[in-house]
Length: 92
Image (cartoon, rainbow, N blue to C red; front, side, top):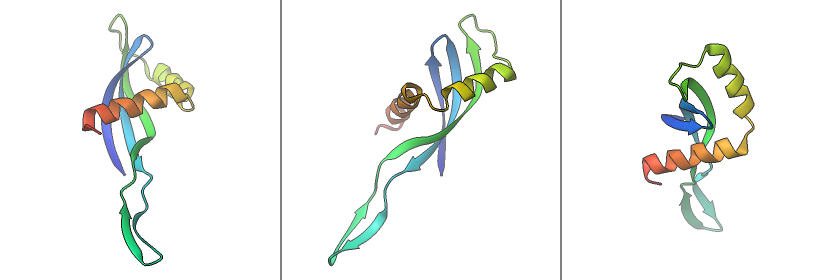
């Protein structure tokens, strides 16, 4: 699994997020004699907030990062933002 670190603003925090990149492609295939290759599409499968600062530049404490990580695990808006930032960086 590939990974990439992305810097992102979320609400009032600047975060450094390590993203683990998945791919939904199946690779080479054969269907009724026709051969092909499904390269799929990359997406952010998992993420870990490595560090962050608030709007005043104060470093977030480990317990704050842990709470934020837990809050954002199932947040579709945040996942969409990570995907958008990833594709902007890699040009996809």
